[in-house]
Image (cartoon, rainbow, N blue to C red; front, side):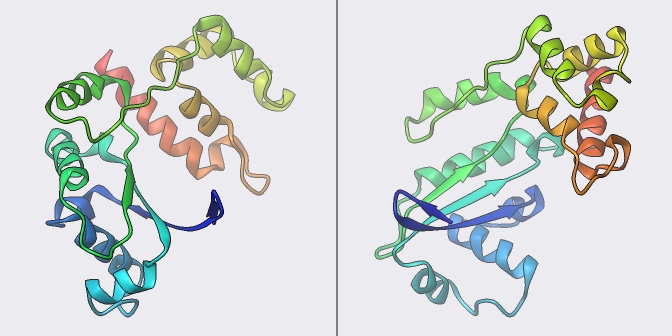
Length: 193
């Protein structure tokens, strides 16, 4: 991967790994150990391997964690920690659903070292236009009431709507793992409404 001419190392980790990691480098190390226990023996070895790279950690999906507030605070504390001498800077991306935005805003007032970026939600007509722009076999199979329910349940989130309709390798929507994840989110949201 390349960003601005630099090599980038990116790692996707689950909330359980964040929960069990006392620091950002341990988070990175634990995420790699989860993938393969033989990758690195210690943090110094990892730092050396990532020297001159941009490092990105994506923490997903915090939204299902029972202790989301604690995990968000922990991720923010990692950003606020002093870097290790000679280690590359680490960026953390942590997608958070709209119902947790107020918590992020509270944290933002405590520290200025992290940024919150909100995706602009589709209004009902934009969401419907997006859904109707999907391939005909998909968009024609969805009733007007289902379109409205889907937009309401996802809060018009463009990412969720895109993921909901993204097919992989010719899979149908119902067989697509991304669609199943988004459907679980929608089902959970409907309970909250």
